[in-house]
Amino acid sequence: MPLHSKYKRYVWELPVRLNHWVNVLCIVALSVTGFFIGNPVSFGQSASDFTMGWIRFIHFTAAYMFAISVICRVVWAFIGNEYSGWRAFFPLITAEGREKTVKMLRYYMFMDKEVPETVGHNPLATSAYVVLFGLYSLIILTGFALYAQHAPGSPMFRLLGFMYSIFSNQGMRLMHHASMWMVFGFIINHIYSAVLFDLKEHGAEISSMVSGYKFTVKKEK
Ligand code: HEM
Ligand code: HEM
Image 1 (cartoon, rainbow, N blue to C red):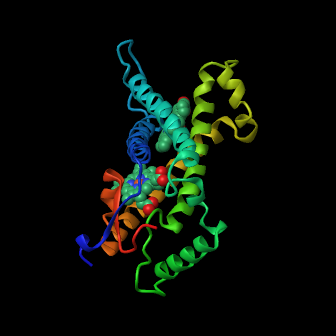
Image 2: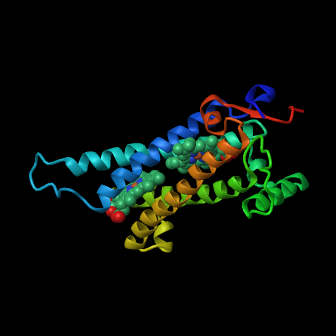
Image 3: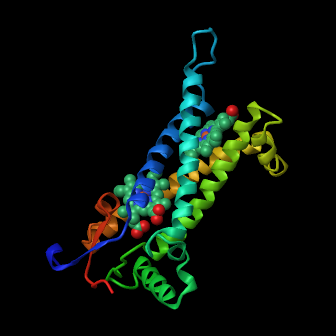
């Protein structure tokens, strides 16, 4: 069906789009600097060698931005439109959501050829997003618990002290590092799905995260 015979809908509000791309930028900066922290390029042998200092500075600046951005998205889940609200992330709580999930599963399992149209989030994608937000929480908590070690006794250290009853010092680093690889696993699948749905639905899936608009066969209620 040509794009001009479809209905144009405003789906992603500006805060959702901004949040998406700020998170992407932060994750790229955090991963690149994180690799260097885990495998340092220099050990500050002279007073003028501050390479790792700058790398850590970028990591911590991006970390604060990322944590604030994730909190903002959680708040937006309670004030945003129906497509970005928290209910969209738990499709199984409504009969309509359950029906959509079954249809989507059938498509992914090659049982149906026609791709079911989704106006907001794909119900299977939202389940992946819930897991992703769990990983975000883990990466933020372990990251700040490690960061707080520079000032034992500080309010941040006291607040996150419970993390050290769950993980050892090295266990904390391992969890922080391993969750990055799990986020990479999500990203590979996520970009594949975004391209797949862009091609199959002809609804401007990818550009919708820039413009906010999608094109759908069904008219808005
Ligand atoms: C997507 C988000 C993030 C990614 C991908 C990431 C990645 C990494 C990686 C790969 C390391 C090296 C770990 C190792 O092998 O020892 C690291 C270290 C570190 N990260 Fe992150 N990080 C993220 C978020 C954060 C956040 C939110 C904080 C909070 C301040 C943080 C604080 C730290 C600290 C303090 C270290 C150094 C640990 C040490 O001194 O050994 N990170 N990060
Ligand atoms: C670090 C990499 C990425 C992460 C962690 C990520 C994460 C997410 C998350 C959490 C959402 C849900 C948005 C919300 O409701 O707040 C989303 C939606 C979306 N993302 Fe990404 N994204 C990444 C990269 C990309 C890239 C490179 C593209 C483009 C090819 C893309 C395209 C989309 C689209 C089209 C949606 C809306 C689709 C839907 O869920 O129905 N993302 N992404």
